[in-house]
Structures are given as structure tokens and as C-alpha cells.
Length: 223
Image 1: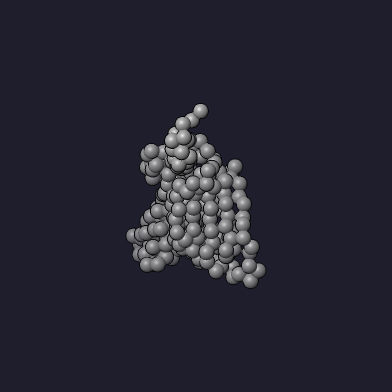
Image 2: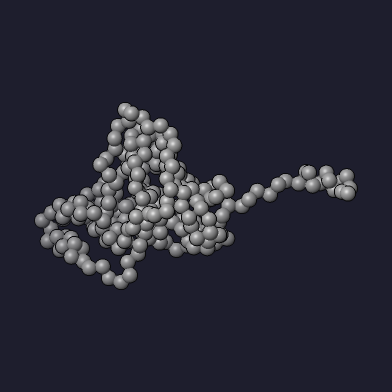
């Protein structure tokens, strides 16, 4: 039988909350998703300044990553779509797509040196082992949230990149199987990245929330 003071001590002791599924060494080196974020930022800079060199860098970085469809990712959408919500752009700008190269050709203008750079990039054959990433795409109405449930391996650095169409802010939150937050990025119109290393194998929920006023198309990319 427990002594009275021991019983009181047991009742008063706080219950230890389950720790988040994070390794003691939470971040690894930059991977393929981080590279695509860098490409997207260079692309946005080129569109703002009208300079071709940042665009060529964006195209080179994006083309060096091979994308595959995300299999095994389960999506659940919550929140009601507004029937009169204005639509966003036709899609998310892709530095690896043919449209980006066409823009680069136009920005090069009559400058022969810049034209040569664009031509060389267009004719470039990938060398070495290309990086790979997995990708899912979705459209999200104002006020809605997409929850993606996906598995990750323990002690393997994970990256999750969110790239929206830029018409409105998107927020990104990653939680482990216990509901503990392992990464959260405030809503923004720019591309964002969550990088972390799980301590053990498990499922994670990646939440993408549209806090803007227009329908937003986005790409969710994992390494």
C-alpha cells in the first residue's frame, strides 16, 4: 500500500507529454526540394527585374531535378469552397517548363552573348546523377485546408516544399502522428520549405491552408 505522501507525490507529478517525432539532429544538408525552392525564388526575381541571368539559373536548377508523382499521399480537404471566389492563375509557374525558356529567349533580346547562353541551356544534356523529388498538385479555395498524410523514414532528412501560384498567401504546417507540430511557416505568397529529420518511421500530416481571397493552385514537393 502506498504511503499517503507517496500517493500525493504521484498525483501531483506532471504527465510527461509525448515528444515530437524529431531526431536530435533535426536538419540535414539541402536536398532536391530545397533546390527547387531556390529555383523558384530565382525565377520570381527574374520576373520582377526582367533580367535573364537569374532566369537561366532558375531553369538550370529546376531541370536538374527529376519529378515523380507522389504515391501513397492521402489528401483530405476541409472547409467550404466559396462559389463566387475568383480564380487564380492558370497554374504555378514552373522554371523547368518550356514557357520559362521562351521568356528567357525574349529577355535575351538581340544580345548575342545572352542568346548563346539561352541556346546552350536549351541544348544542354544533363550530366551525372540527377536529383529526384516527388510532387503533388492541388487547387485550394479561400478558407480551405488540404491535409496530406504521408510516411517518412526515421533518421532520414526530409524536406517538404510548398510553391503556390503567387495570387494569395498559403500557410504550411507539418505535424507528427501524435499531433505535435514539427514545422510551421506563416502564410505567404512566396515558396516555403520545411526541413526536418524524424527520429523514427511514422506518418506525418502536412497541412496547406489558403488564407487569401482567391483560389490558389500549388505544388507540394518532397525529397
